[in-house]
Amino acid sequence: MTQETIRASVVLATIGGPDKSERLEEVLAALEQIEEVEEIVVVWQGDPDSPLIPSGYRGLRVILSGTKASSHARNAGAEFATSDWLWFLDDDTVPVGSDYLRRAARYLAENDCQFAIANVRTSGEISVAPRIEQSFLYDTPGGVREFWEPGLLIPRQLFLAYRYDERLGPGCLHASSEGHDLGLRLVIGGVKGIRHADLELDHPPLILDDSYGNKIAFYAFGNGLVLLRYGFYLRYAVVLAKTLAKILIAALRLKFREAKWTVIRLWALLLGPLLLPQSPFVRGAPPRELKAAPKLKSVRGGA
Image (tube, rainbow, N blue to C red; front, top):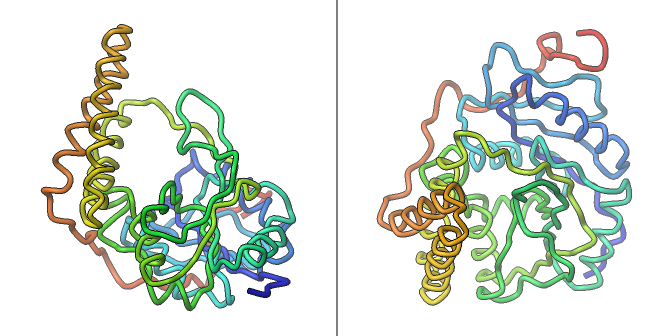
């Protein structure tokens, strides 16, 4: 594969909110420093009458979607994007280094790969995903692991041929593993990818609030479903055994909050494969681009 330059459309889904605007500013400011970013397609899933999207950034486009579901939003953003490559990010994932896409192009060419997945850099009590120290390839179904959705860099036409399963991911009953599912379908289709340790995204730690238990349950629904969907029965059994072991260890250490969360995860891993995946509830008109900018809230000094 020969690839000297990758020029990409960033696809970024958000439900917004005042608590997210500051971090979103950091993401957009970092993207402005990456000259190979041709446009930033923000898919707004919040209140259609008051999108809280900072204005004034180079290449910024806002797509309004009444459906609060990440896979649906990412697929919609890919449809509106115009660059040859898509780079999926979340509203709290900041790419590390203004040469990110130049490095990605080099690593893809060196390894003869067609898509790349990011590494995760985070701190705090609970990381959103494990950080890797060594890069690895996605070239067999069994090797598809830790397929993190934010950071996926892929040719647009290739993505549109596969897309995210809109019945998986945040906003759905099975609220995770949409990346794992997509990665498996890509590899089964003969597409080779890489998760590279040097392609880092900065992500804040998970917040341990009252909703954390619900997140664990809905995420585990997706984890169990996708493992069994593709016949990974042994891996599913190992996950169950490890989860049970964590419950026992947490209880012995008198970490009852941790034990409770792990019990929830075990229950959801068992139940998820028994539940029929559901498409998200579609509200309002199909996604459309916001042409009039005055409604956008500017955090850069002036609306």
